[in-house]
Image (cartoon, rainbow, N blue to C red; front, side):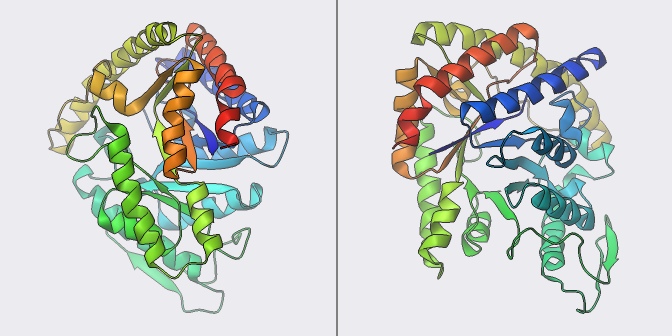
Length: 368
């Protein structure tokens, strides 16, 4: 089983931006030293959510240059496709692919907040359509060779023409690995047909929380695996897809005992919920500008949210929980150790939790 750190953590004002970015850099570098396999970055704008997430590709390239080895992978969770010009998206993915020697995992999705959409000139109501258009264009751009006819597009949101080819090319002979969320049949088969890894959600719409996350993961993973095997892929291609097929946690916290972990987790989530409520005020303003009215975000202090998005406890408890997903066939666990406002006090809990996970949990599952 592989383990990845999710570089999340909120800045609550301009004076904190530099500290949060420097701290997340230190977190990523320590993750490499402790034996984690990848770092994943979000794609967010204007809110203080992971300040360097305004340009995850630039920041990933910066991180790659600071790593001591070349074994780490760099992922996005996820790139919001409607916010990216297709030509620039493919160029930047290819450049990062070259810089990391083929170690990119590009998660893609259509959704984010109205505040981020309108800030970059995209109508929230059109996000799904634009995402599909941009994805289709990107795939054709990856396929184009120098002497092929020019690719021209004008979607109403983005337009352009590629006469020669994308420079640089990809690091290897294949496209960089794309990751979609294995939730709808279309997204499941999109990943399965191309032998791409997938994010396996721990919920089923319309709810994004619940008390039985394993049941949801098991159901969605079974559909993805069946679809993957229905195409004529080699055993090697299937194994390569499964090794990075990912189950995600927004908040991971390990402590000496279950009681200590629960107490510290609730302190973390109280701070996180306060940030969500602060940001929600601005989201409602953006919704008004966008002509929409979205439901309020779920309560991160509810047992449903905690069950879906958190794993916590003693090393023994956390290892036992993750072993279920290992036995299921999940290849990678994406873990947020820095969720919430990233203050020095919060980061002290991050370090103790991640170090304990690396010493007392990870070895049990890497050998599984």
